[in-house]
Structure formats: structure tokens, C-alpha cells
Length: 76
Image (cartoon, rainbow, N blue to C red; front, side, top):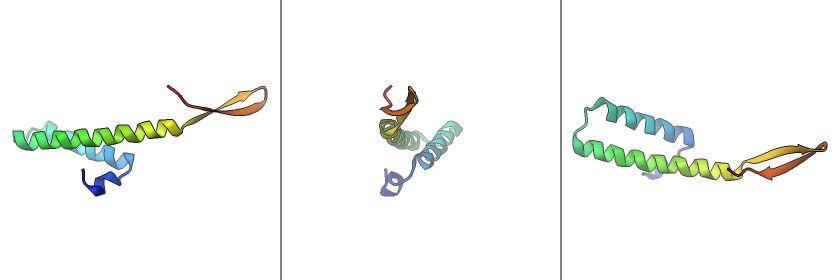
């Protein structure tokens, strides 16, 4: 992935991934091009997953307990 792609936000990465999927679904690429696009898509997918995991770690849940607001880490 290029440095430009690394600096993209989640939404931009998802759009790039959607574009790759569309290209692959068209079937116009030869095998070598298809494999390269697939590899690129996998790299973007991993980056999206990392962004989601990092975001999940930052999420906190606010709970009300006897009229007091308590902050608790979000754990799945």
C-alpha cells in the first residue's frame, strides 16, 4: 500500500476496496492483474480491520448507576 493510501481514513479505504471489488467482478482483468488487485484489496481490508479494532478500544460506555454516570470500557 502506498503512503497516500496509508493516510486515508476508513471511509476512503472502504471506497477503494469497493472499487477493487467492482473491477474484479467485471471479469475484464487477466489473471495477473486480478491477483494484484486481490492482494491490494487484502491489504486495504487489513488496514480497515486495524482501524476498526483501534476505534473499538477507544469506545467507552456511559452507564447510569443510582443517578451517577459511570464510564466503562467497551469490551466485546
